[in-house]
Image 1 (tube, rainbow, N blue to C red):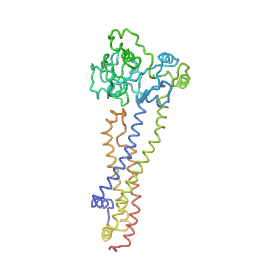
Image 2: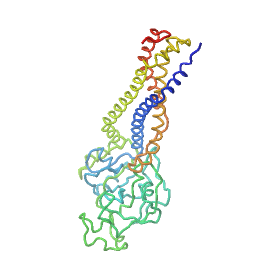
Image 3: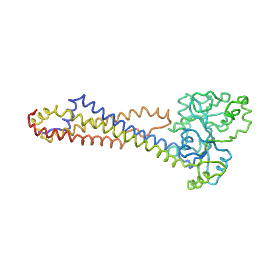
Image 4: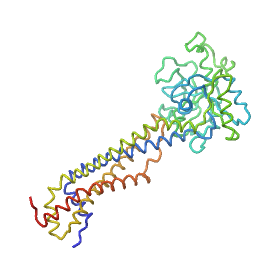
Length: 422
């Protein structure tokens, strides 16, 4: 007589559906945690790495490479100091420099960073695999009081072309120092990029200078708000200082030479970093936390698998009559052994599948929130080879852990024969 071991294992699990469901739930939650941590880690890393490309150097005031990268590219943190306009122009004229893009940070609009720059930003900035910025609506700013919004800022704040926005001091969502006298008109909205560009309000450098007339000391003076737009445009709006600037070179081979020249520049304390190198340093800093999270998740998976072992072990004595009936129907001891192993593997497999499905659904729902709140676009959220390895590994590990209870059932089967000896 043939005994379909897997079919018997499934029916046996269904017969103890409450215990089996709780066991699979424990495995599902543990696998979901492990896969979730790994997918968020990999997705966040890919998002960070795709934030800027095609830029050879980033220059800012003397500070650590990671800090300079964070505030200039990711809009996180604050610069230690500014760069003089004279130094910027001098470096921009160096041989081999193809283009430069100045950046001026420090203001905000309803919690979104305002960045002063020039039209070259929309021409030269690249993200992902050297993808250029594209406009969903409108065009780049051409006037002092025009603004271009990132996709997320426009969506979250409900702005469209022609709307007026006011810039405020500081980075908080609420500010008591707003430049209401000189609003900016929205003339462009960028397509989504999955980078901090989506959460940025872009205005001309001259606009930053214009709204700060009368605010040179950091506080409002009697001059603030007294000049008309015509009087403001008639003034010299060339900035005295900027926060940082991006450099593109004719040949990347010259990057090290120019970097060394900037880092030893005698005019003022400057730092020049290569974005790729700084990103590698950033991930080395948080690598310890990454490995810790993965280790904790792996231990949680081990705990989930232990529940499979406990579930089978605690039911052995109760199932000796079941084993005796199977023997009376012609089952061999090795059938009993295989049944317990198959049952452990089945519970783990279904639990792992459920955990993976839970991760896909949870991350699909959380991805828009992650992009809106943190500017991080999670990629690769669907099934992949790693997921199959995890599901297969969990199933195999459960089968191996089931060898102990299976051997015990095998011995009981031999000892009991066709009747139970209590």
